[in-house]
View 1 (cartoon, rainbow, N blue to C red):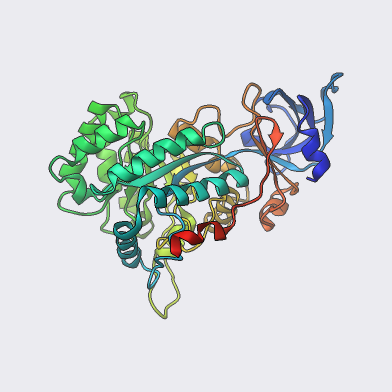
View 2: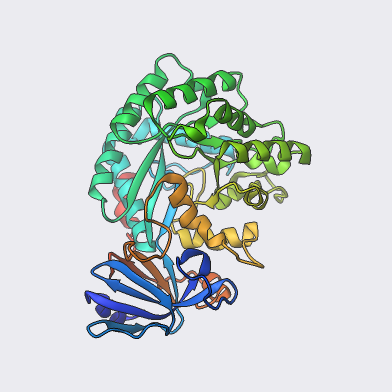
Length: 443
């Protein structure tokens, strides 16, 4: 928005005049004129807090308040990224995926983890990722942490230290990650539950169709309830129609009375196999997911990178899950970044605006847009428990992203690289970290 705008946001009291805001993300907009699911608003900021949100031009600017005319530029709340892998990020230069497949990713990450994931290595890459997310305008992140026995005592303390170091800039949560076959190994669940409790994290695992799956789910649910830990699963990341662990998770949640346990929503990610299953199976599963109160996060860029990859052939089945059908049942749905520059996804930079832009194209979050912008803001904030995030309302922190785009087509046709990110009322430096900062890890 220019250096003048940066200077104006240093004022203790200012008003963003004539902002365009997604109607679904601003509170108190009932009765305002709405066009293409957007409203025009004036946003009063006082001492780093949103003091008022009014229809554009409806309230005179009070003496002592600096007017900042932004000419219809869109204002969004800072983003919430509900599913990432900060500990894996940016290892591609060292260990790429040999063929772009899911098995190739598993093998490459396992090799890199065993060879290189010291505390210093993990900290350097996680810090780089956080710098990027912060510059793009993300205020809250949940990361999954590879929690194989040999890695637990390295990565979890690093996460805890970074959570404190980044407090006030990026709110951080963590969930453990291992395969369901590891989760059932003797002594594993008590150990990881103790670690997650110590460091304020949650429990999770990858649920695939193993003989250990039914018993493993019972043990994980029981452990989580006893320890008072939230649950977050990687689910059915495959196009095999026989993969139905999502249904088993929903049944377990109902059986354990999870929705009344006071431990927050269960979050599940991926759920790719739903797109390959018969309609009757889909209907049965989604009804159970709705009854269980589970929230679902789709990772469209990573899923399209890995799914249906066959050498020399064009992909035909893309693997993104059924968010429209879920949303129609009242299931909370969201999108997130997932992996960045590692063997599971060679690209990405934790830019949630890019994630939302690509999700709009891939999943058809348009015609109408409706409240789909909540999928990258308010819904993950609510599902993961990031209080006060993902919406623009009086009394919330003035953590905002201002872009030049004034309409959906303007917003989503360009990367908005010149965006202004406001944190606690002040515009921040949005310079991205240089990839060269990581070169010492490869040398």
